[in-house]
Amino acid sequence: MVGSRISWTRPINVADFAFVSSNTTLMPKVTLPGPCALHFRGGDAAVLASAYVDLGQFWDDTVAAFVAELEALAQAGCAYVQIDETAFAKFGDPEVQASLAARGDDWSRLIDSYIDVTNRILRRAPRSLAIGMHLCRGNRGGQWHAEGGYEEVAERLFNALEVPIYFLEYDSPRAGSFQPLRHVPADKRVVLGIVSTKSGEMEKPETLQRRVEEAGRYVDLDRLAVSPQCGFASVETGNPLSAAEQEAKLRLVVDLAHTVWGEA
Image (tube, rainbow, N blue to C red; front, side, top):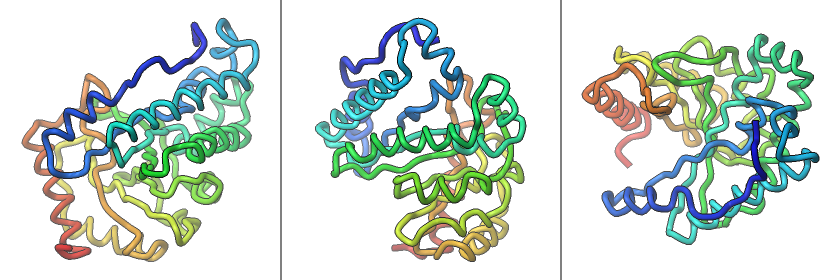
């Protein structure tokens, strides 16, 4: 339940960015929770139970707070932000659709609402920021929250949503096939999350290369990239991998990228 009106009072991620930035020569990426995550979990009832009488005001406050954080990051020198918005990937799960319907939400109308809110933020974000969006179906203790491919949401996800870079979970059959990538327009990029962070079992390089080539049937290779499917510790409980296994997974991603795209 939302207990008070949403307002931005101070930078939340600037100190973390400054720490990382001071300890690397590479470009740091700051990850923010998606602006629709709170509503997705509780629906209108959680928003209107106490703090709000108007859903529109909730969204206005959410947009304003999110934009203020992006502006603070940009002023601190941040150039790269990732929005974690798991709702979009979960909309393809029939069980999630049924759960939303049970609380009075039509998932198809809800995704349009979430796209609108996110676009409002993207249009007001500092032009100096490169912004991507990560989508997955949950990542905690080696477990997940939902399953189902991108097909039902792909056309709106890749075209109506104005984000230029998509980080897509694709490490297991739960995410479906690469066919929905046919909807990705020519001016957008896709990062294939084909290396799992849920298990220490190492993927085979030749299998990963074949998967990239398969995705290349729908999106040109020069607009594709590779990554782990999610973070190694999305929450405090983390995932069942050792530090050595995590490092090995990251090296696997780098080696795969060199194999597919060369050393440049």
